[in-house]
Image 1: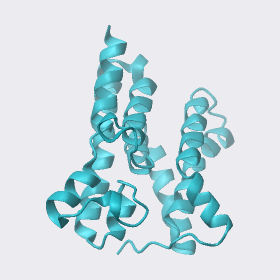
Image 2: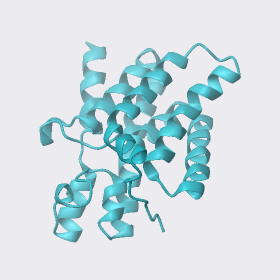
Image 3: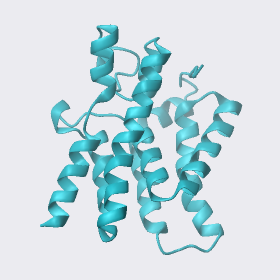
Length: 192
């Protein structure tokens, strides 16, 4: 029974569409009608209000941190289940006909909750790539690969499979971005 409750609560936490809620409240707009149509923090930043974008980013991270840390403390054996369910909730929220965000901020929350070093590795990778390219999507893809590569290089094979799955899922959510990058049509992002 615990496994089912943990999965459902983690999914529901992850499925809270903060980008949609905040843009409706503060910008009086539907984020799905702006930019890429995505409900995530990057598109909220593109909507033109950096403060709302950063609040969205923080809440999308936090909605993963809360269930994952709780499970890490009380139900360690379900750590990766809670992580995956929170991520899936963000990407496929039942409230929005399963059309959610790309999961990067939620994944960052998962990483920091599982192991702060993993979060730092991701964040540093993301910022270095972004500083060079100004492409949020490319930065996210490469940073998503940084944790499994780190585990591989340092010989920490025990949990590598989970992080490879997460990279594949983020690759999947960015498939349109990958096409645009390939065709040199991807939009650069201003984060400040």
